[in-house]
Figure 1 (cartoon, rainbow, N blue to C red):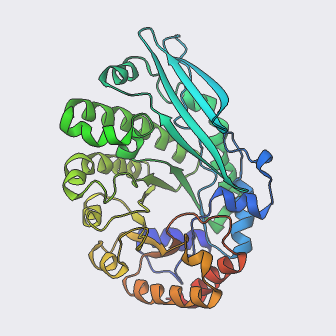
Figure 2: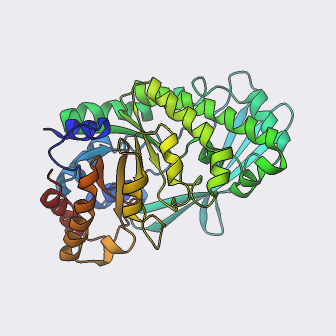
Figure 3: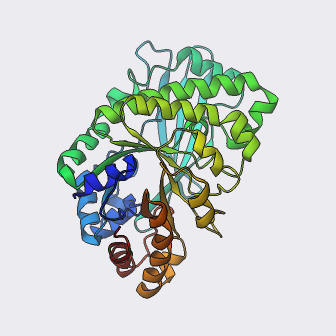
Length: 388
């Protein structure tokens, strides 16, 4: 059984030879493996790590759940052809940090967003939006009136990023699957344009605005999914971390669930699988995942960085949903020795194999300082204890 068959059969709920081994491999791991210095790391460009990622996964003995061919700039605004939406970008240093200031000029008003980029370690760059485009209802109305369709403005400008998916798929062949990974689902996508605190209050203070925003940006998400699948994605990983246990069961059920389900249904209409990404708290809402028509959920984050108890998740999540994760990479994978890693993975797989439909994974991507020997121990333990 090759890697592609193993993962796809797991998503179909069919019998496989062993549990797939797919920790969350991120760009920093590729930069570290090839020792790419910060000045050559193309965090804000099309870095095309499609084939390099395959070499890293092979080195550590991982199965290929390949995310790093996904386009990075699906939400970076581009100008319209009719001059009603003129995007200008300025880079500068503010308080010692790389800062991107984006303005969008419309016939009525200029919108502004500010994003900071910080090199937190030799191989890791992170970004955070500090000022958002949509500060009030009038700002959103400009998006409705003037924002050009994704397929007409952004897609042509970043088509080369989508073509990385084609490159990765050809290079992988039967060894693995391609994941189209983007930051957010229906709720989380709003945080690309509006401050989270405002989004969480919008259903109570202006329900019409909330509904209009989530429907508008969900439609754009569908267009992104269409292109991801067109370029070879087998699975779409939808970010749900902001719509996590922090919003509460009632809020999630009333204001989030319907829209996340619609996106999942659209992905299914493209003959692709849905992997829902919540790497944080989920204890209070994970039962609702059973109603979302998703095919998989990661990443069962245990305390102290999440609140998911493995036994409970294995018991209440419907059996046809793939579960991924539960191995902490923040402390455990970094600070433990190979023997401890072997023991922990053995414990997790002993429980998970009874249920089936499980993929061995970390709860998110690991930092630069996780020892290579620990990553190899992760893979070796998966092979040792993962056989069905």
